Image (cartoon, rainbow, N blue to C red):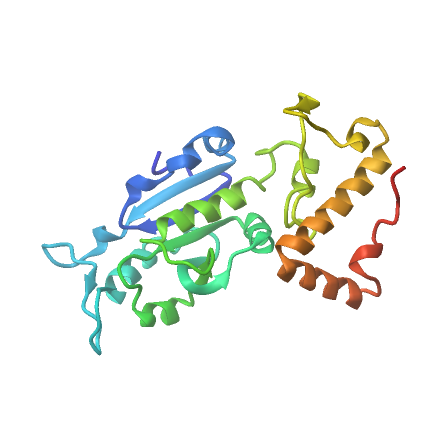
Length: 252
């Protein structure tokens, strides 16, 4: 479903491979939300705006070097064709600002987003400047193109849209929502391969469960993501407290 009716939150993707969309977003909860009109998708083939018989979208870089560069005239024409589409214009690039949960929440509050998927060595700098494109990166690694990154960004945003997941509590307790990684999760059977569920989780004491989960989330964040913990600690100190004194309840 490359082009849905323009309803709900509107995602517009400029790509050389429109057949990659919606991809996994056409399945599960995101797919149901797409069919329900909670969000819509328009995938536009950049190659349609090429000006020669070969439909060329790239050329060699000035100054030499390996690889090819996406032409500014072709990409700009593609962007000009969707000026009526809502939302910020984002170019998926490894040199961009790191995409995070806060940016996902901000995009979910927008009426939509336009995502430009790069290929080859990248995009001519002039169209980035002329269009004021925001550059976003998934992390410190390189993909073969912006399409997987665009799918990841959309997935992170779509699940935040009202009506997609259902319970607001589900979102509130996820990793990164409070600057912490998520606490450990357990389900049936209670005893599996000699490993048992922590007793506090089967106690029925909701306050103790909340306290245990908070302590575990803080422990895991300190151990696995000291960068997140340092950032959160700094924020708490500026607010007049510490990261450890937010929940002082103890378990038996």
